[in-house]
Structure formats: C-alpha cells, structure tokens
Length: 300
Image (cartoon, rainbow, N blue to C red; front, side, top):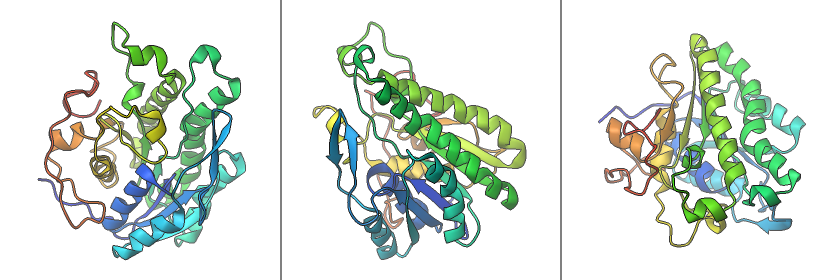
C-alpha cells in the first residue's frame, strides 16, 4: 500500500461541493490536512437549477459541508458563487485564495448540472449550458488558479470526468439511442483532451493536471434522476480517494492522466479510506459492467 498523502498547509478549492461528489472530495481532501474552500450557489439554503425548463431544487448546502468537515476535525471555508456567471467564475480562485490566507494549491473542477435531451431536439440554450458547465467554467477557473500555483512553485488541478466520454459501444445499445446524453458525453470528452493539453503545458512548472471519473456511475442527489434505477452504482469514496491521489505528487510523476475511480485504486493498490480518513474500505476489483474502453491500469 502507498503512503497516505499529507496535504497539511495546502489550500484546495472544490466546486459544486454543497452535496454529492464535490462534498465527498472536499471531505477527503480536508481529512488529509488541506484547508478546503467549498463553493456552489447554495450557501445556507438549497438553490434551484433549471432542468428541462423547470426549476429543480436538490438538497445540500455549503454550510452543511463545512459542518461535516469541521466535525471530523478538518478546516473548511464556504464561498457562494455561480459558475454560470462569467465574472463570478473568473473571480472565484482569487476569492478562495484571499479567504484562505493568500494561496491556492489545489483546484477540483466538479460543478455541473446535466440536462439529457436527444441532440436533434436539444435547445441551443441547453447545448451551450452543457459546454459552459463542463468546458468553459473549468477553463476560466484554471486560468484564475494557475498564477497562485506558479507563485508557490507547484499545483494540482483535477477535472471530474465521466466514462460517458469514451466512444459508444457497437452495435449501439438501447440507452445510447434513447438516453439523450450525447452533448454531456461530448463535453466530458472535450474536458479530457483539455486536461491532457494543459498538463503538457504546465508540467515544466510543476503543476499537475489530471481528470478523474467514475468507473461506472455514482448516485448523488443531483444525478439520481438521470441514472436508471436498475443501474448498479459505486461508492463515492473510491473516486474521492483517486482525486486525493492526484493532489500531492510532483507533476513529473503524475500528470495528464484520465483516471477511473475503481480501476485506478485497484491497479495502484491504493488504500481507500472513508471520507473522514478514519476508516478503510475493502479492496474492490473494477466492476465487470464498466466500459471496456477503460484501461486496466485505470488511466490513459
């Protein structure tokens, strides 16, 4: 087993951390010693988001996330921000650094809200919003974060991806024909390529850039309605542990990876710990129903 990473003295910004995957990542980074700046629109009251032209309110607030982290002995700060607002998105890394004492070492681009509609019927607004969440916002955020990482001489950026970015199976399964997630998948594929391009550009400056996505799917408050009820999902702790693994090594040792949450810990024999860092999860092989295009090494 590898040594448990120590993020003491580091500051991390995790977007979309009022609930679900973002909250889990924030908890795990905090349990490793980082001061975590959590951000979303929902500071103390859940905020509504648009899906299929209707307001959808999903449970979870930043104050709840901070309370969970502090109850486990960690440090967290909450900053409300809307990544759909360009000015707020651009300013968020600076606000996070200012709130945490002037530094920003780790950025996790997790925020997003998908609306699955077949491409032939998809409104342009929905298409644009999908790419705004999963491509444009990460672009603006890493541009704001990189200057702080350059000043520190090191940094770590992790983009949250999806196995949906991989090419569809042939012959096309029924869900590929009817699920309506092609725009989401295309945005995640673009995010993956942007991740690897940015990794190449920043490696000489010791700033690591990687992407991590579920090997299957993770059922969260925001994603529950778009994951079929019968689909077997995975525990979020494996993804949070994989993000932590991307957040501490020098760029020359680990950068430019597109990693899968069950495959990567299995291949690298990582000890998967609970979100508060106190317990461990059993070692689990990657599920047989994972996309066959995922590398056995857990990353490409």
